[in-house]
Length: 172
Ligand code: IMP
Ligand code: MG
Image (cartoon, rainbow, N blue to C red):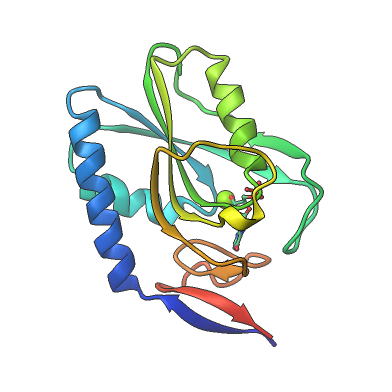
């Protein structure tokens, strides 16, 4: 049975979320931005982020999945749940838990750009740059994490561990 080992305690995550929120508040004040979270992993980050930002925003979610379960999947993305809000003319901020190969978020950014938002940016709490397969510019990034599978703070392994408050590495 794999055992989670804490690599980023909740206190540090909170501090980083507060810093990101200050920057976002400055950049998006008066713009009524549309924050689009990628389910399911971003749900914890999104809820902490919007409260820390504390300016009027709208939120929506999409659900994307790569085929197959487990730590590595094929790289084909499917859209399971679309945005429900009109994207055209909106200041859109995509909120993602972690950028790994970059494939998921690349797909979504291309999909949303096609719908003519007024602006389109990406905010990711965790970044694993060593694993990148496709290039994605991350406008707001929290932490760079090592090339290891991480769980907690919304992130799962096979639907487990999302509830853990700290970011952990799964050890055998
Ligand atoms: P990408 O398409 O490889 O960038 O995959 C990104 C998605 O895979 C994220 O939205 C996560 O849901 C998931 N993912 C990637 N790395 C991890 C990890 O270390 N822990 C948990 N989920 C991960
Ligand atoms: Mg995700």
